[in-house]
Image 1 (cartoon, helix red, strand yellow):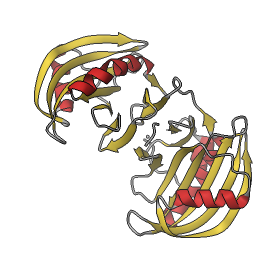
Image 2 (cartoon, rainbow, N blue to C red):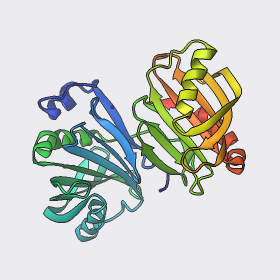
Image 3 (cartoon, rainbow, N blue to C red):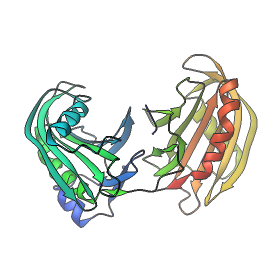
Length: 323
């Protein structure tokens, strides 16, 4: 693929969206550079081309995907294209409400409503599907798919549908990059647009398609480590999730940059996924204004991949920002 949050469950998400916007987390689409709010308790992940967020009971999900064909102009063309997006997630799709033009604030587009069976578990779900584009830049846009079980859809869809009216553009990185977003720490690092991004357990990983290098992010709440020994032990524990036979070549040293501070170590080991020899660096960075929270950044690669990408990734860490 191209590169491209906790409140208790509210009785009515619409009331949450209107009355308590502060108790919300922003979900961002890293290529279209748009975002909107969902409840803090929802879990946000990245799967292939899609960013998704939903309650832990999995009764409802909102999925976002940036698109570059948002200039569709007629109902039939829009509906055909949107159904192509639905079938990434659903089978036996039935359209209940055909494509209708919509306009929300600075965004315009189309919506389709229907039902189908969730491919992940065969459960019958209802869905709404929107194509929204910035009226000032109509060639780019975002597809938003909200879908849920009968109970989940009834509970959540109106609040999320209404909250999407607050869709807004977000600040993106340099040209040729996409945002690598860690949704728990609310931190972003820019990576090359051509890199593939996946989510595995707590980690978000991105790298070139040849698999020679990966940069991996994890949000954490123990970022207030204060001495080298404690830091190094903690960071090695993160490294061994991915590598075995770990040797530390560069022990913990302090790093600072643009309102962030932390620690870095470096070394080598064998990648668990395929046994290959790799070099690595791992950095703990925390916002100086909120030091109890932080971001672990692990960069690792084969000899050639590390030499090619390590410097660029270290440089792009200067782009780290909180959202």
